[in-house]
View 1 (cartoon, rainbow, N blue to C red):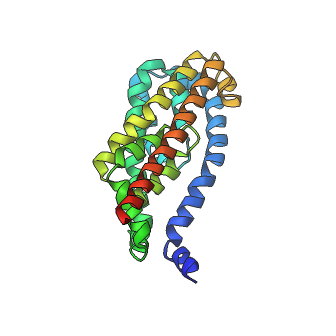
View 2 (tube, rainbow, N blue to C red):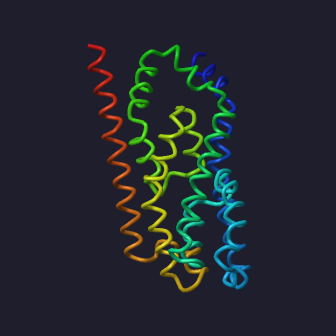
Length: 232
């Protein structure tokens, strides 16, 4: 009964997680079709004319309708490195929007549900003492969905300043890799069908995934060891 009660208490958050986990599949297909269909028109746009599109992408990335990797790859293809500031500002803004959405859906229920579990509460308290490393590692991985991580991180309720800085530092390497990948591609269709066909890109994504996985393991192991030592 206790477990079912916890599920009911966090029903809105779990529903949001399920939705944000499924939407990237639909968003990727729709985005691919739009990029291919309007490739010629997009290629004629000046740098400043992309501003409205990036403004829209803030909300589509926050709602998982356009994966951040796709936005970065398309930026590299159409704008090159000149578009990097647009992507960075876009995903930082999208992460803030996602943070607000997550706090609205959760309404603090997740944190409240931990109050009845001292061990879980102590573990989360240890995470709060190292918010930025956790956020950096979770953003560094190219396989963790951006919008879903917005919701999960907002449920832990990190300080907004740490959330923004950690997100910036964690997303920057994978964003630069994606922009570079888009810059190397000759046709938009080839990067949509196989975005990691370049050997260097494959190696880069593997390294980022490995660093984030090992880092998260070390992070949680350290938090757990400190938690256990404090209980002695």
